Length: 238
Image (cartoon, rainbow, N blue to C red; front, side, top):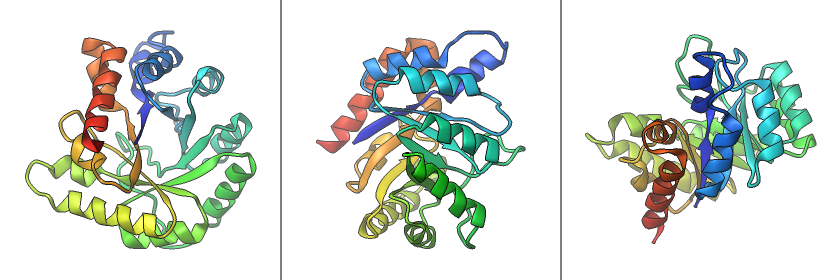
């Protein structure tokens, strides 16, 4: 299983003072050295954390692969197409949200989404859609012709202590997505305490984890933070 480390909140700390540290590119180097299989960064339309220059730097220094998260804002799409990251994950955005809450609404065919997928694919990026673990969203993703989906694990992350229903939903969704020929990724709210049951789902091949790793790194350093997450995921697969 691949671990992609989301370094957005390294930039969040920096933007609190609008200075030059901590540097997301340096964090990416440390994450890779500790076992990350890829680096994820979300260039939001409001630029609340990752900035254009950060994504440019990450495109230069990332030695594994870069996964750029983005919504449908035309300027962001054009910018990411110029950078041509290995993977581009399309996510919903709302200005009032603290973080991305819920997957893309694929209940109707959005021409902007179809166009964006085409542009990113033409630029050479592998397109993934961030969706809820719902069979209808999975089927809609497959119909759009993308190679991958990322299952939103927020419901599981919020209720894993009290119920196994969300984990069962994730497992069923992962199996359904794999059956439709989609590569299956997962992320949102995964922590050192709750990651292993998700990492044990055989159809999931990639986890995107950021806030928990960055939070731990503030206390222990990025190397230890990523290495521990890497060991937990590997243990779950043995």
